[in-house]
Length: 270
Image (cartoon, rainbow, N blue to C red):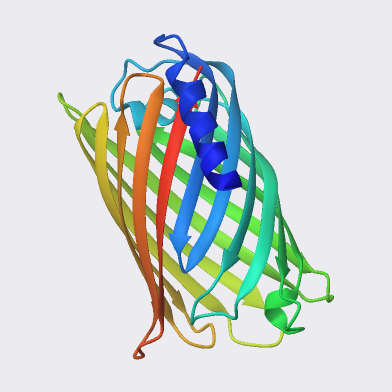
């Protein structure tokens, strides 16, 4: 009931907002179902107004080289085959600063993960704090390359380091655009082999208001290899209000073990 009420309130707030071109604030609510049931809320403040006239509305902050601070909170429960059943709460804050002239990028972030499984004292019950720092640059007006370091510390004393390299590029077209992204990550574990993470994705914008996309991710050498496939769509009803849907299927290699998640979202800008 709480999740339905929260989503309805968010839609009502979005629909009551007066239309305008630029924005400083963005807020969103996501509801997920199937094997992963959760509600997520997030809010972002941009250090200067974001120009929405340069291309696809979903990529406005990316194209405008916008600096921001964002916070998020998720409350959910997981019921699937890949990990044990558990409830969890995640919350965090992060930010990105971009220099106006040269386009240098600085990222900072903190994330807290709190799983709660009263029937299990194993690894999936450890609370984890993650601290991240990243740096990179706009190689062109629509291309970024960012390296990131993440330090994660569990309340059981275990910790690990993660390194990622992230590339994003938007092909600007007269009617919309095509966004592509790729990430390589390496997780350095103290007492076992390193874990490789690969992710690629793309979004096609037939108009500035509408986008369709897909992504693929693979985690290599983490007990068993995990592959995840996602498809998604987002529609800006106007310049301030967007609705989205995403479907993800994750599976263990060479097995019948998998988990799927469907996410409905709404977003408002003001």
